[in-house]
Image 1 (cartoon, one colour):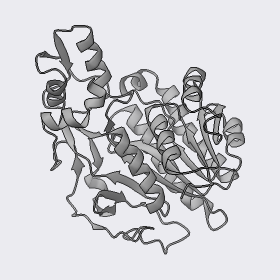
Image 2 (image 1 turned 90 degrees about the vertical axis):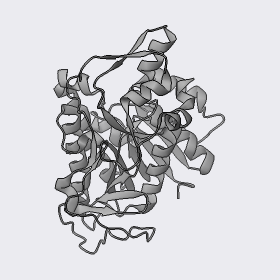
Image 3 (image 1 turned 120 degrees about the horizontal axis):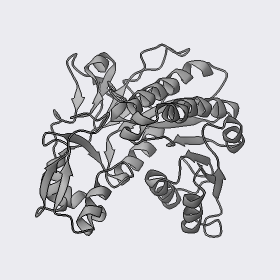
Length: 337
């Protein structure tokens, strides 16, 4: 699918971006693979890892998704886009709301404008479980971003070939927003206890490999307007702490600003729009597009899904798959060491 195609990833120097690039280079032979991000140090480090000498397809653009002109310039000739750029720290967003709004909402609007100008074929925007019934500013901005990308399919009409979809998933093991690096640092420093926000707290859990593969598969499945949600396990935060350091005590520190006790990816308020596929859910758009012939119950790979029950809700605490302590250790051993 990506052979001899040009791919751009915004926020491409993060943990997801690095593995996405590595995976693309292993599986495909792209024409161009463009990293668009604002952090020059991370780009410099990444350019050493994925050098143009070894990978002639690599391109590096310093830029901010807030800057429509620069973004439009970078989009020239691009076929596929992954929009990963965002301000993601929940508690920091609570204290800096307008910065989060400008990047997560204004940036989403700019990506839509730039991709339409360049006639990009497919765009997938990365979202979060915090966008489902949000209580924090970060989640609210990502919900708004999701709406922007879904509704963009109505803007294109039959003039543009461009199609937009969203991928929503939970906490990514070992990423910047993960608690793993925090626990790991305390363990290395010889800490006597690990901070636990609440003993009842649960989270969805997905590895970076799984996240990247799900995004790649969603490009194949998408028709435009869907929110793709993977079926992934949950963990108890106390079990994660036990998996990383069973000998350490737990210190209850309370929920941080904007945090939820449990997360959800499909709200009961979206049950009438949610389709159940073998390994994922699809939340159909609530609005009608120019093309009323799209049947989301059968995707572009001819996989079929069916509507969930009216009382369905996909939450981290009612998940039918919880990882045990041993499973957490096995799944995340690369990050624990």
